[in-house]
Length: 524
Image (tube, rainbow, N blue to C red; front, top):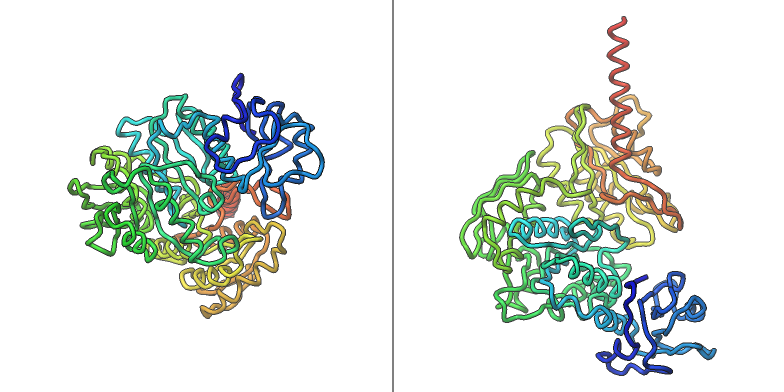
């Protein structure tokens, strides 16, 4: 539900910029909010009937009217005569985006926007850009996977990029509260489903592209085309100095750089010809130290974030800041201030001698980069605890299994968010990938565990507990796939589940057992 108290606009005013919109009935009826869910309709709302993959909003038009909708936005009229005005359009999503922008008086026109897209790194990059801008004295808002945040406002979200009506409402609230700059993650779904129609960015950032969401897009090329829209359709002005910041080491980034050459600032670790590149860098257990070449000169960077993947995120953030004219001092200070990112290579401190890391990596590429980083930092065994989500791209399951098998010494295949799929079936589709790396199966019941191998524990809580119980001091335990999530979706139920909380409980149990054993030795 999107609404403002004591705020309403005539229906016709919302669709002045929507070509082909046909208004049926009174044009001057007042609209006090927009809603895409009939259950959340309040008197005076415009109900928007959207066609989804599982449900069609047109089936709920009459329910919305009964709940007090003052008008409806549809792609086809219902068979029954409506008691309220209707707006008929060819594409309700696009029309909703335009109507929402009009309803909230186009708030983005007063904001400086940074849009970040890519398969991996969006969240970390957005937090780095936020911190840099804050150190430059800007009032910053953030929209992304971890929620919406500005000033004292912090709100959770179910989507990386909210639908158009929610998005315009958030922009409006930010503008009212004095926000000057907004940093937001822009998902491929949002670009494909017109959630950001009418939104134009001062700077667009492309982090990378690898296999993900093929259940939705169908192919890597279509996935790339969705991402490309940010740069082809949503950049405010190409006259500004390099408003596009693109990963020059990524094959798809290279395509963008070639297509939009004059407007692109590239960043890379491998290519010293990139606009932004490290002159030297050191990746260690305590973080990243680097000297980065920029158009404004070199800048020394010190960050507690881990690994090469975060070096790329840092370069992307520097690029966005440079495009906005932010000083190198604010860049360095802002990066140094981000000491951790929720659920991204998040270390869990403990006194059990284990290095426990929780990460959101849920694609083959993200897992490979994360495990490569952890492998470099570990002197003993690397445990990999992971699963794959249900009702999502099945082709990546054995691929992720192979990645886990190549980098992990001991792999524990478990459940992620199985959704409506059978968890055992998902695990069985992961297993061949692990087996392809030559690993043999072991059991946690074995008295002595092998140096290398894999096991299956479908219950995720049990998998985490058993791994932490059997890990040895100095081992690195990677728990991947869910990161910041505080739930597990089983069937259609959303159950409380946080990898970090469960791991902390397992560590506490291990600590208690250690103390008990030490006490027993003292008595004897």
